[in-house]
Image 1: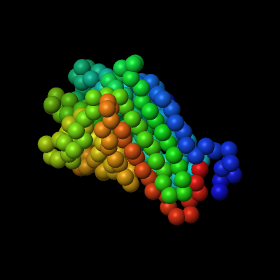
Image 2 (image 1 turned 45 degrees about the vertical axis):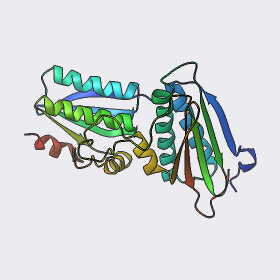
Image 3 (image 1 turned 90 degrees about the vertical axis):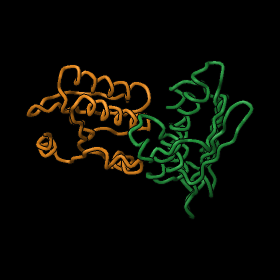
Length: 114
Length: 149
């Protein structure tokens, strides 16, 4: 199953609802394109909703890190929402859990953007 | 013993193309055999991910998608071990000189976590230089009392 992205706006924050697998190839490219599209449209506050991500590999992790860096370099913020246990564990193993700003409640996450 | 034990092969061996489709196939084969062998769900995920990362290395970094180069993929299960071997025909690499992806200077890199995750998810990981190529052996120890395939 490839990855799908739907985009919505909540109080000036762009929420990307991701579903499927973020793996080398289509999934990683879809995420990269989605984040670049948001930045190109001038939005710099991005919330990645990972609730329906069933699987992520090292390429997908790398793509999330690259997205985080791209948004930060553009003067924006990227936060993560609703990690599954698998993704949570992966971010802990790779010590990225403390790098990302991670939330399990959308309203709180949206409020946390400066 | 699982119900279908008599119908389940104890080993799977395939010669695979250097494509991302082979990555998916290898993961499915390994997880399928592990599942039939009675490996628990948590270890199924770890085996699947380790196989996926190893196959990506073989396809992308080893054989560099070269259609003339193949990947030999073998899975075996017995009462003590679940073992996967993945051998490419690439130029090989120095697996003793991989950067630590947890080091502060590497933590925000967009790549370089594959081998680290393989080691994190499997009980043993062995590298062997072939001529040409690299062989990775991934081993998950079976808990006492788990059935063989």
